[in-house]
Amino acid sequence: MHSKKLRDFVFRLHRYIGLVVGLIAIIIGLTGSMLVFHDEISEFLLHRQIGMITPGGERLPVEVILNQVKTTYANQPGVTIDRIYISAKPNAPAIVVPRKQENDLAELYVNPYTGVVLGNSQEIFSERFFSVVYELHYSLLAGKTGYAIAGIAALLMCILSITGILLWPGWRKLLNGFKIKLDAHPKRVNFDIHKVAGIVTAIFIALTGFTGFCWNFSDFTKPIIYSVTLTRKPASEPVSIPVPGKTPLELTDQLKTARATFPNAMLGTIYFPRKPEDALSIRFKLPQDDDENGQSYVYLDQYSGKVLRVDNILEIPLGDRVLNSFEPLHYGTFGGFPTRILYIFVGLAPLVLSITGFVMWRYRHITKPLTKPRIDTTSNSSLTN
Image 1: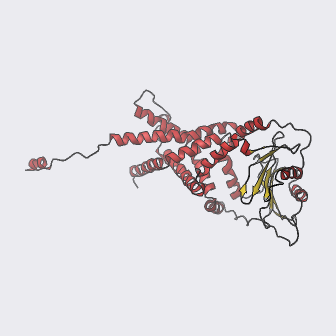
Image 2: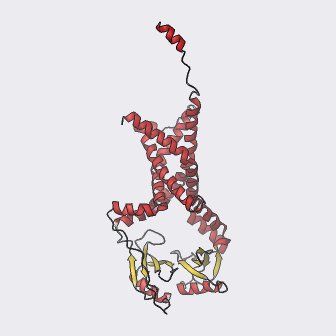
């Protein structure tokens, strides 16, 4: 294909994808910017509402905290504990998530030193607010359909960024690619803002778009990533073998087995089985792990206590390392505080690019003649005679 025709094709592709995905990209981008410092904002507002937790001696055993929570639901049959989060921060509450049938109930915030229930997520405005923002970001508040639409939009945003990089005028003259002529015609100023905002944020929008697409369509993308990286597909989820007449082992015994697997790790999260055949899953944070919650797991048979599988973050294969890299790339945590600040502006970029892109399209549309000039065939024929 001729270079000019190829460029025209890329330009049209860029333009029409932008027009189609613009509004959704704005929503995803703005909500993404709001979520960059979600944890810090939530922690600040949470402490203002439930008060500061003063570390005092050793934390209570997990079993004691859970028993304290269970008394809260003593008059509500059918309520079980789905999971408990233990923060590495000494002044943070333990978070317990109860469950009834198929639905999670409000998270409970528990003082890990006294066992006192301090409040729940329904009482914390910031948690309710960010819960809506999360749903809007990942699924457009439209359930499974919105989840798919957001995933497709994320892929289109990735393609949009790549085509924008190819069309960037700075490839011909680098300085011009970063110059904004504020004293020029509004049409030129609009174009300059579009090209500069686009090239500065393009690679990051591409990364967030690609990772978002992979997450929303993980059933499709995971096998491809494992194939490309020559990684063996993980075995099926570990399962417990129910024993007739036998109840699950006490959590105390299960934790001893799990801690023996990672003796130097910090307990992060316990995911309790929802079905008789489910395994007990316990998450740990190793000293070398940068993830705040840890990425190493121990799976146990809930009846025999047998270790069914161990996922050590330091020993995982390439395919899983690629998948684990998506989180820092998507959230902007790979470079610490500076990249998180940058990602706030990356989230704002779709708004700027959509507005300037639409204005560029309108300029082209308005300046095009509505009808083709009429040809006087009579005059032409007289000239030839």
